[in-house]
Length: 369
Image (cartoon, rainbow, N blue to C red; front, side, top):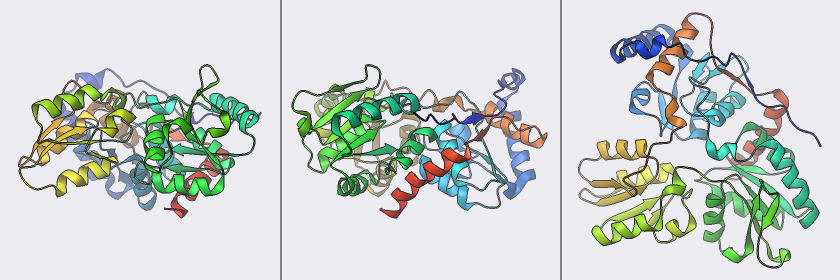
């Protein structure tokens, strides 16, 4: 069994304590100075879930793939300081030119969902599933996955998907094979397949910890195999949260991300990607009321941007994405000063063989949406 090399992380250094002791005013000034000094040689993409103290300095804000693509288009940038998490910076490194260098301000900024499917588990699970179902399965992976998983999908004829194009990609996949293995988020896979007419009793769950298929019934009836992974943020939105809004604010629209559990999506008014949520609120009439089921930093930003609407979090006790929030102003300043000093830290490098196979999966998606 071939196991691909893990992505390399250069100079896994911890940020010096001195950055924690500096005032925010000083750090903001340094970031501005270095941005001005480097000019177009520096590009800072910032994910929607980042803190305002980081987003304030982003050249572009958006979802993970959108930001990686924007980084690739920006050929003038020698340095891409990606304010997101590991898998996003990996994708940016894979899509940008070799001369461009991608830095992640804090190496601790991972993604619990992406980490729920590592290459060893996936290779073992794939072999067992092949024994059970034969050559009838096409793997798809959410872009919220590691470069190794994207490469696995690429070399096995599959493709990546986003929360925006998941339906189209599942339609494409069903034209290729009888069954789909959907990695690593079971909820997005379940919600998307259900919307396409696949009944829940034809969906099984693969548990990578026990290496067992969770399914009550005849295996021949299985159409979709869902990897047992989830987003630690979106899984915390519950039916009780929806019921509370219905009872206390019956005229409020409920809009959630499809990474939320099926039972939550089923009783909400709308469900869609981060972009879908942002656009829906932006286009909604003044005075409309919304409860949003997605990451708290983004919800707070949407609230600030639309004072003419009543907007709340579907779960008022929800915490921001903890791993995403490891990137803060001190880490951003540290990353930029390391570039200025000629000793860049936390450069993300994806091996060429992984990149080649992962880009196959990405391109199959882009060719079919």
